[in-house]
Image 1 (cartoon, rainbow, N blue to C red):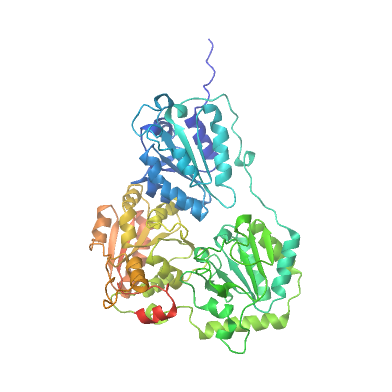
Image 2 (cartoon, rainbow, N blue to C red):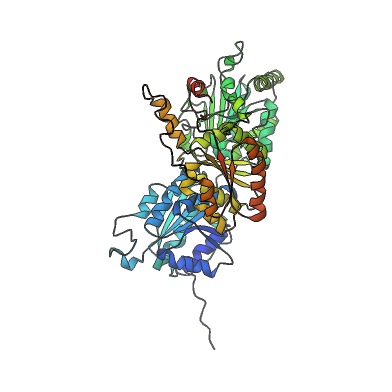
Length: 598
């Protein structure tokens, strides 16, 4: 009796095989008819894959990005045609701009029905989804045939997992997903179809070291592109290097906490809502009239030096001496600062090489001692906070500054902190103090409200044993707080800390500062109030435990309880903090700060 040869795998089956090769066993999205063959295969392999059904496709993309940030693997979004794809677009754009790997897979109606006006058909209604994603992502392709699928999928992975990481998209008609290509051999690992750069020029490393050691006041400025590179032992080697030569380190806002903020040489963040320390190192004479007017050497590691990173291109960032910029993206080098050395290199390899040559370099003991003494004196005399009094305040309503102090004290080491957008960014960047392995995740290029609300779920799913906390405002929570229901359904113990002020505060405060109405000092005050929603009841209705916080004492009692219950009961926790509505984050020039100090 003869037996039929085994059937060749379908496109849907091959898709899951390649996801498994990439270490991805969790997908996020909302199903529909245009992905019928793929979701049928996911059910057949439900012991191997989880398809997390979210409440909105944008939320699904944010959740997938949170998963990618924590795991280092691609986040995968699976959505249906038409509105499923376009709803996911904002999340895909955010991952692209933030530099994290995201694969969006959108379905399409069967090709035989193209042009006939079938439900959600992109072609007939000129919604060219592939082109839309191509304009917003690193790579987008339409899979017109099962024969081209593997080629297009592996290209998507090459682009997504390149450095910097990127967002990619595939559009797959449902009939193609159910078809089998000619027999293919599944590779044993992703190394068979993709690799990463690891090169660095030795001459540029030597030039960098010479420039730093030849300066009196050198400085290292690290960007978010170092986040992955500076994990583990490399951070230790980098720290030993800056300690050997007493070179201070500051970070961009979206690299907050990549270098330990309690380290004696840390100047914490520069740029948006900057720490107070960097401005005195950049201009030492502002601290001591006997010192130089400007610092004199800058090494920039993996930052494109955008507006938030440079405090709107503040000229104080330009040193009196050389600028060295290291980035794998040649287009970012020299864009915003005049260069002495530009190095196109993988930043991890550059740091390794710099640390190695630094071991044999002779340190100028006098210069090292002078810099170390200056930084120590600066920290002893100058608070890092614009408003230390309110950070230490126990008044009611609770000051957002004081809430950040409570979070600094209460968050366990290693927590993944997802900061949403709007005023919570300013409070978190300036008043939180973060050391690795705690990580702060922000999205400060696209800056979509609701990003952190979703991403914290993916972060917790990606690292179930690690606390995951979102810091958000009430308006942003209302945008994507429905994903708390997703967390409840899948027993995800994430924690949301919601700054409740019943206002789009960043907008109303900004309008009040930049566009004051003559004779009406309160014209913009709470002009964009949001209707006093009961956030705690909303959260409870979505399946979370909810806690009102009205004082520092409440915060100190409730935050540890919520963190413990999140892990113990695997249930979402929402901490609703009723903050001072009139508190102003440190965004504005000093005269504004003084006028609006709370």
